[in-house]
Image (cartoon, rainbow, N blue to C red; front, side):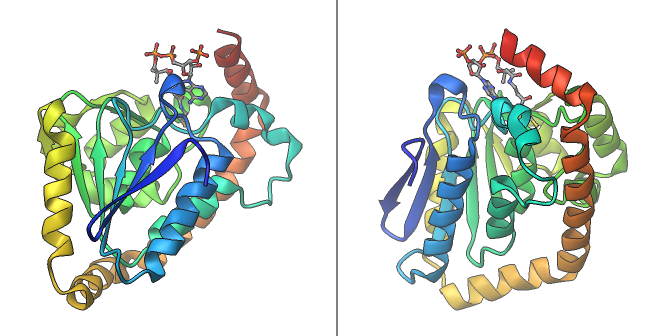
Length: 248
Ligand code: COA
């Protein structure tokens, strides 16, 4: 487990908490690995019925840009830690409740499409700045987001990379609820406990039924996105943007 990812137990709810506040919880490879490992263990632990994903005052500023800049050192065909984590969350059989405060950038927003309940602060700032970074959408978001919020909103959010408030995300259906900032974690925990108290077999089967019709489409999108993302990461336009961010 990474020092930047903590786990906490509250009865049958396992909280996976991002803990790298000085970097706004930007995700390193070690953090993806730790999150994936926590999910793998929770999947087979009958005493865990629900997982809550949380940060602190920020959810996450997305992938660590330093790792994006260093990607040229690895072959484009290697899956990478982010991809492995996404596979874990996509296939996770129990409910996942996300508690989102502050920044939720890049994968910080797209991973929410794989959470079953998303409680956002009204003032949270979600953003998918892929084009600004010379990148493309990932996590199956190129099909999941338009399906969730409609093409008109998804097109603008993806193409412009404009930020989205938590209130706007809830109004669009990207978040389940938007609440005042200090209520995010209590509300998310209450919803997690509600799900944890229900018969786990029926809850898991319900989740499976909800996801099954889209599973093949999501897998196909993720495979296509991965190829484009890996290629874009290695372009001079993207590498110049990462270098300029890291110089600041
Ligand atoms: N990767 C690496 N470091 C990051 C980071 C990221 N994705 N996001 C934030 N940080 C670091 C900053 O470099 C800074 O480090 P420093 O204190 O050592 O200089 C620290 O976290 C605080 O961030 P800062 O930029 O000073 O905070 P801010 O409130 O001015 O801005 C953001 C917050 C999220 C708008 C800004 O940090 C940002 O744009 N981050 C990049 C987001 C991004 O593009 N993610 C990838 C998506 S695919």
